[in-house]
Every structure is written in C-alpha cells, then in structure tokens.
Image (tube, rainbow, N blue to C red):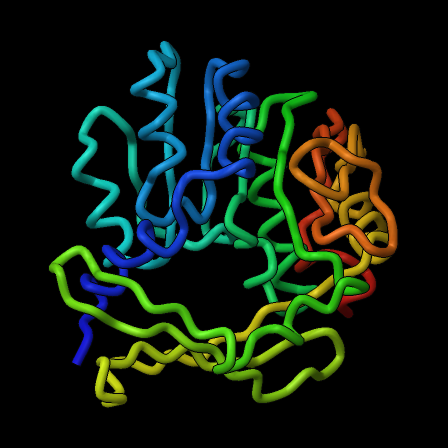
Length: 253
C-alpha cells in the first residue's frame, strides 16, 4: 500500500516547478506579508524564502501529511486548517491559492466561507491571487487511464499514476486517482471532486465577498482569457468594506 506520507512526497515529483509557480513567486516577492492557502508541501513559500524574501511567510493546509513535509522548512509559519477556519484579521498583504486548490471548494457556502476568511485575513486593499481551470476547455476529458504517467517515486520505486472520471454533475467532476505497481497491483486509490466555475459565476461570488477583480488571464503568460483558455487566473483586491458573514446573509435564511 501507499501511505499518506508517501503520496505527499510523490506530489512534488508529479508537480515540478513550472510557469504557474513563477507567476505566483513574482507576486509573493512584491509583498511583505504572504498567506499561502492550500500550501501543500510548501514549495512556493520555500522558494520565496530561498530567494531572500524578507517579510512574513505563512502557509496553511488541511492535509496533515503534506504539511509535515512543509514543516521541514522551519523558517516559515505553517498551520493545519481549512481556508474557512482561518481566523487572522488584517495581517497579510497577499493571499495565494495555487495548484487549483480553489476547485476543491465544492459548494457556494464553502466558497463564501473561505472567501470571507481570506478577506478578513487581508489588509485593506490586499490582494488575493488564485486560479481555476476554465470549464469551457473541458480538461477532465483527458483524465483517463490512457494518459497514465509512469514515474520513479522518491524512494526509487517505479509507480504508475492514472485517473478515471466517475461523474460530471452541475460543474463538479468526481474522479479517482490510482497509484499502481508495475505489475498492475493497486497501491493507493483516492477519490476526489473538483468544481469548475465559469468566469461569470466566479465574478459574482467574488463581488459578494467584497473582492474587486484587478486582473484576469487565460494562461500563465498573462494572455487574454478566451473560451479556449485552459485557465482562469485571477487577481482580486479586498475592499475596505468587510463582507457579511454567510451565516447572517439574508439569502441563507
């Protein structure tokens, strides 16, 4: 079998540093205080520290195994929690949510609660940068066993990573990621769901949470967002008017 710690160590191998990381690192280096939400194993903040970022760097993630890897970098703050559970108040100039972590927020209530906590954590006019896959590009159609990836994991073991979509319902794609041995034996099977929000729905829910869109791109080279764009890369600013808590919003009654 494949443990949570082994899977966390494999994550960095499957997701090497790339253009998306360069995009976020440039933003991080411009801010004196940074909150990385869904930080995973901490590669973004670790790279920022190595690049001599002189300010505050803090990462949060709900996955204990990933955070155990991140905590090897003791120079950075780490906290085990979900985005909606964060309690910081006006402490960060920049918040980031990389690796399509925003898509793990599956319901409007979960998105609103997370955005409320992010807004609260930011100083007035603070920035929040994140990305979500463009649903019009239908990326999930390539998530099938014919596109399996063979890799050597950090322990030197050869494994195969494959995906199989189970359902696509109301913009939520549910799939299974399977880690297998060379002979085909299943070492780990993990079921997950991701939500695909289009640009219009995204703009609406961001505005409700007190964010104003500063920039939006269709790729990591800051290209224009079109129907064919693979990504919806978004940078927003937090208004000084704090959003209402979802629990007191009249629409929830």
